[in-house]
Picture 1 (cartoon, rainbow, N blue to C red):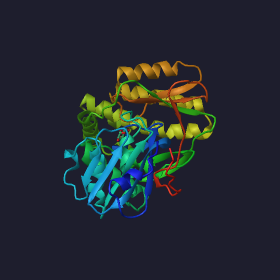
Picture 2 (cartoon, protein in one colour):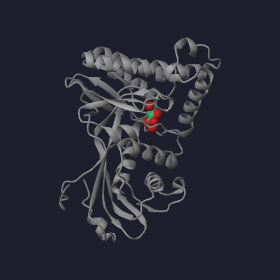
Picture 3 (cartoon, rainbow, N blue to C red):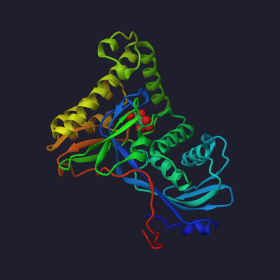
Picture 4 (tube, rainbow, N blue to C red):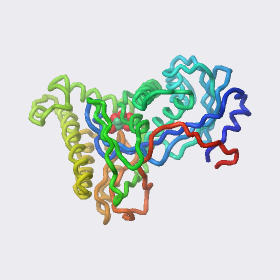
Length: 356
Ligand code: GLA
C-alpha cells in the first residue's frame, strides 16, 4: 500500500531526495484522562501506523494525497488558521505546517494502516509523520509537543500530550510509563506470554470536543479546589462540593493509583491482577468520568466473560471507538492483536518503485 513517491514527481516535486517518514498509532493500557492533569499513563506505540512519502518542492505548498481520502491536503507553507482548512483531514497537516513553518513546500502521499476514528491516534500519527517528512529534527518530546499543538489547532479539542508522546517515543516490546508532571517516560517490558487485542465497538468515535473540554474543565475546577490531582488523596476529593466535579476528580486520583499498581502487576507477572485493574479502570471511566457508551460497556462485559481474557477497558478518550483487552495469546479470534513497536522515525531503506 505504501506509495512510492512517484506521484510526488508527477505533481511537480522537483527538488531533493525522496523522504519517507513513519509514525505509529498507540493504545493506552491504563491511565485514561490523566495526562492533562499531570498524572500517569501507560500507552504503547503499536504496529499500525502512517507513512508519508514525498519530496521537497519550490512552490510553497504542502500537497499530500491519501488513498483513503477523496480530496488532497493542499496547504500553503504560511497557512493562517488550520481549523478553517478543507477537507477536514487537511487540518492536521495544516496544524503541523503552522507549527513547523517549513522553509519549503512538499508533495507526496499518505498511507495508513490505522483504522480512522477508532481512538488509536490516527491523527497523532499523521501529525508526527508529516512533521518528520517536512524536516522536523529534534527530540521525541519536542516532536510530541509540536504534534499536540497541531492537534489542538486543527481540532479545537484541548487534548493532552499522551497520544503524540506515545507515538514519538515508542519502544519495541515496551509500553511507556509516562509521568506528565515529572515529564519522564520509563519503558516497561510487555510480557511475552500475553496478547494485547484491540476490538472496535462498532461505534465510531467522534472526539466530541465539548465533552472532552468539559471533562478537562471539571478536572481544573477540582484542582483549583484541592490542589494538583496528582498529589490529592481521596479524603480531599470527598470535600469537593460539586458532585460531578467530585466524581471526575475521583476517577483521576484512583486511575493514577491503578497505573502504578498495573506496572507492579506486569513486573510481577500477575496478569490476572493487571486484568482486574483494567476492569476497574473501565468502571471508573463509565461511572465517575462518564466517557463510556453502551456499546463500549457491552463489549467490555462480553470480552471479560470470554475464557482467557484477563481484563478489558475502553482505550483513548471514550465516546465510542475501541476496547483493549489483555488476554492469553489465542483467547480472542476478533480484533487486532497489536505489538509494542518503535516510535516515529524517518525510514532510510531505499524506496523501491514497485514496493507495495
Ligand atoms: C485522547 C487525548 C489524550 C488523552 C486521552 C484520554 O486520546 O488526545 O491526550 O487525554 O484522550 O486518556
